[in-house]
Amino acid sequence: MFKLITLLAISLGLFLLAACGSDPTATSVPVPTAIPTATTPPDPTARPTATTAPEPTPTPVELTKLSVALDWFPWSNHSGLFIALDRGYFSDEGFDVEIFTPGDPSTVLQTVASGRDDFGISYQTEVLIAREQDVPVVSIMALVQHPLNSVMTLKESGIVEPKDLAGKKIGWPGIPSNEPLLESMLGSQGLTLDDVELVNVGFSLVPALIGNTVDAIVGAYWVHESISATNQGFELNIMRMEENGVPDFYELVIVASEDKIAEDPDVVHRFVRAVTRGYQDAIADPLDAVQLLKRLRPEVDLDIEIPGVALLAPLWATDNGVFGWQEDARWQDFAKWMVDSGRLSESTDPMAAFDNSFVAGAQ
Image (cartoon, rainbow, N blue to C red; front, side, top):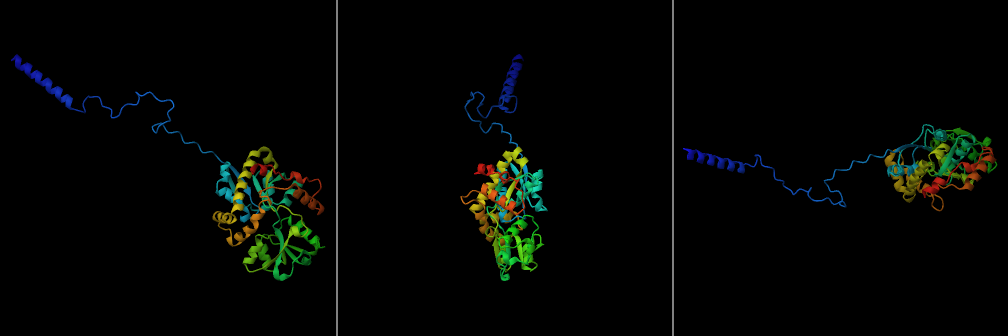
């Protein structure tokens, strides 16, 4: 009986031992499927592997908002600004730029001087007059190297030079700087403003001319309005200002306030650098520039801007190819002309009205 119990006990033990050995899910320790790497000493020179925890995503740099007030509705002359916007030249410099046409473009110098707008486009004449009136604005770069403003008449009118304007109605946009310009043109051939009738037609210059509301227009650009009239079937006579008693001048300039220049010179420098890149692209390929402008501003009329930019692009840079540069003599001569015409006092310093340092630093 004892032997039987002993045999049964041995048999039961063997059975249990066999059962435990054949069950993979019981209490056995899991066998790793790969050789542990912890036993390998780390190489201090090794680059992190894919198993390294990912680096946190960098926080995007917040762009500084800037505003640029235009002198008029967007057209080919502004294409370099829109190139800088579209191709990221402004954002490369850390800026989020708004380019807009103010409700009243004649207020650009005031809004820039007050700090409401960071930069603006205005006229050389207006900058000098503003400074005499203690509006602290400075031209930081020339947008166009020569005059675009001109006097235009219908080809059929026979009015081809200033003396022919005697007794005629001349439409103008109401911009104050146009008066001394016209006065000098008339004066070059013995006339005065009293010999003509000025009619404020706003910016409807071409409609007023081709509709015979007026006999001539001033304040119209020979690279724009003349093409608009031609496209409508009207040939024009064009009297260029610098050929009729007015010294050569910068048609448009980009301005900043004295405070902006003094307090944020780095912002001004980076802005000028981005604008320069935009206009260098526009000079290199004017057709592409206006097509980009059309994409961003669908209201742009390519029938005017394509032929117009071919005339305009050579005026964006100096004869040696520098965009934005301003000559001392040009400011001095133009200021003297304004003094002689009674529009400016001798106390106004033309050399303080512009600053070339930012353009020089952008080349």
